[in-house]
Length: 225
Image 1 (cartoon, rainbow, N blue to C red):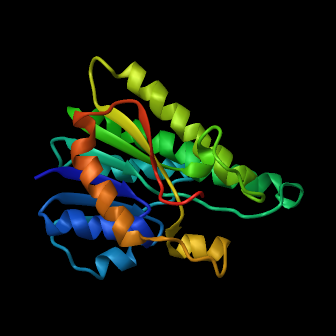
Image 2: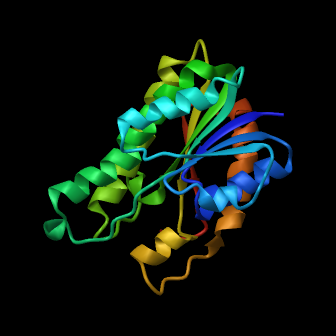
């Protein structure tokens, strides 16, 4: 069974991923600011850890939690912050917060977990179609979509830097998924894909995608956004 670290697990795709991996007997370290929803599942092979990805001092807790594992097989950078606000109304603090979670948090968590990862391990980072160069863009998502573009480039850079030693790095640019975060940012919008449907795809890709891909961006969307 694999050892898997997932961020952003209190709800949505991350919450569903924890359940999918745990049901197969994999060991999961579930990271989120609110660990109560995962703890309520009472899954024996899941350790829920409360952590704010924007707080760099908190990553010591991740290192300590991984001490009992010989290695990490899969890291899924799923946590994200979505802000839908006109550019001129977005404060510097709001813009920075989105980047601290979506870019700096992804980088710091990856940096923390990498020393534990096996050569054939797999780092999967969740991006967005809005971060893909040439894709349709939407007003109000300056901070969010640009941050998601940043992690696409980060993935390509990491794959090059670690191509001889592993692990593999890939990034999934998701289309609209019906999650609580989407509903909060776009009230009334109904996405064509559910959280469990997308989680099922990510689950399979995380376990097997590195056998065929490294340093690649895969667009996972059945709709324009």
